[in-house]
Length: 428
Image (cartoon, rainbow, N blue to C red):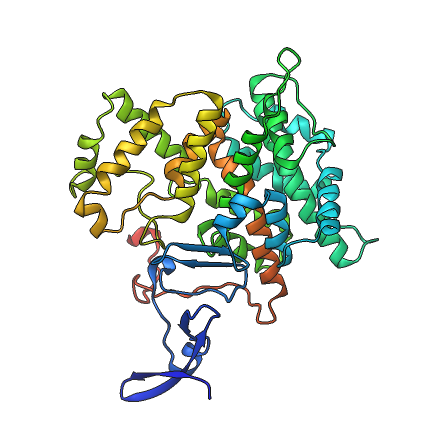
């Protein structure tokens, strides 16, 4: 027998279905609430509202759990590659060797960017933010790569997926090189996805880039940890825009724009800037912690707390270990890492942070890892976007295939003036 909950309004009762997920999560189905009662729910920020049923990513904020298609993210970060994880997210299962090889070949075949797009990059203002450039260029991809009528719908969709995953990586490296006035480095067929990106970013005629497998492994882990995170702001934007049945490029462009802000994708950059401020002021995090606890002070410690996680973000633990490994391999010391560790140590002994569930999140260590890899600060959010691409694609695909698909159209509670007459200009 289906489970229901009872809602009583003005003495009248209504039965609402209770929906339960595979991990025991429960939700009240209010799809017919307005039709049956004339009421809607009000949930600013949608913190208590489920917009869909999804089989892609499971999160448990209380227990610090994150799984892609049922597989713990810790296992994927240790054993998988970004390409393999992308296949898992998009297709639902880990690939067999032949499937992975075929997928890798597709990414390689579609990695070049149309030469006419280069003039687009070169004509953006030098100070243009890379995220603004990236969102514009992803939208432009539709014009350069229209529909493929000779292909089946499934083939066309798979080619579009490969185009995005491969070309966005190439465009990101290309925009960086052009911003420096350097010669663009093209992708190589003999390099893996992550190795290709590092080579396109840092290779030059005067200083050839030497591929270091430990750095490639670190970049794989970084992108795997960013690959999907359930219905966050940018993913919700991709699903919302995609619900209008727009092309995938437009939906992904919307996700990039949503990721741009400092409270979402830009948080890793904000963390590094905060750590730099602490370093410049002498390196003692104590005054900054005191400011963060002061309700009258607008200052906030970036990299602490999460909308869903009420404990330590599992991704942050992996990144901290990865940062230590990379710096050790490079025989490099980053004083910002020392400050981050002192900041975490002090905060985790403070009852204010514990009581308010303010634990380090993904962004706390990710920026330091990107610094170690040589990624410039203004490219940090772009790196997040590349990592989140397979999640956006898989969410768009799942939404498209949903038999209960609906155009997203939230309601509101109107609080403006009641009906009133128009007043002509001479009487105002």
